[in-house]
Length: 283
Image 1 (cartoon, one colour):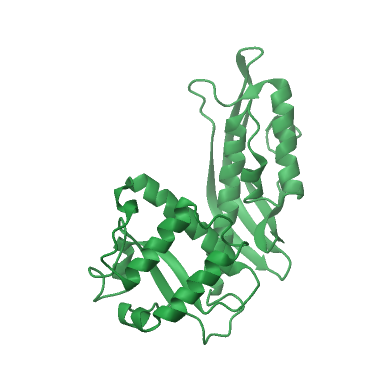
Image 2 (cartoon, one colour):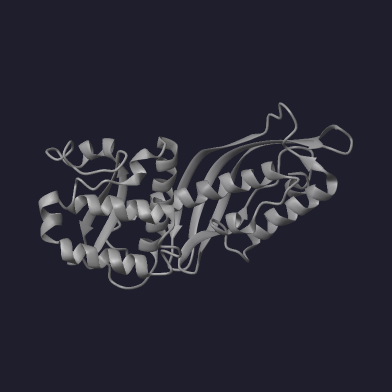
C-alpha cells in the first residue's frame, strides 16, 4: 500500500478534511464524535496539516493512548469493510516506530501525538469494493475477529458469577446466532451450579495454536483453528474443584455479517476426547 507523503497531504487538505467530515458524520462508524478516541483521532489528523498542534492527549499515559489507538483501529477497519459509499481517502493509525517501514525520508519529521500518527491513502481513483483492502488484509482482519471472539468467550467464563455484558459478546458474535446462544446457555448453567474460574491459583487458560481462513463467500466465511482450552471449574457451593476440561482440538467458525460487519455466527467443535460426553455441559 502506498500512503500519501506530507507534501501530498498538504496539497489535498480540503479533500482529506471533507473525507474526515463524512467519516465523523457517519453514525455507522462514529456513534459519539466527541468521545475520547475520536477526539484523539481528529487531533492526529490535524497534526498532518499543522505539525505544531498542541494536544492535551500528549499527557496521557502510554497505555491509555494505546487503548485509544486500538479502539480507533477497530472501528475504522469495521467501517472500511462495510459495503457503502465510495471512500476517497482511507485513514490508518499506527505507532510512529512503524513509519520506518513505510517512509524513508519522513520517519523523523512525520507529525504524531504521543508517538501515534495517522496515515492517509488516496483511493479516489481505485475501483475496489473494499476501499483498497487486499485479500490478505481481509483474511488478517477475519483472523482477528475469530481471535477476539475466542478472547471474549474466555473472558465471559472468567467473569462468572457475573454474566458478561451482552454488548461485549455482540462485538464479535452475531447477536442471534447459535454461537452466542451457546455461550449464554453455558454461563446461565454455571451460575446456577455456582461454578467459577476466579478462585485463588486457578490455572485455567486458552490458546489458539493455529488459525486459517478456509473459504470466503459472499454471505459466509469459514475459518478453521486448532485450540487448547484448559478450564478448571471451581464449585463455590462445595468449595472444591468440580470438573477440569482440558482439550486440544480443531474447530470451525462460520462468520456472517451483522449490520454489515463480519462476526462469528456458529462454532463447530468435535466431541471431547475425555470421558465426559458433552463438552458444553461441563465447559
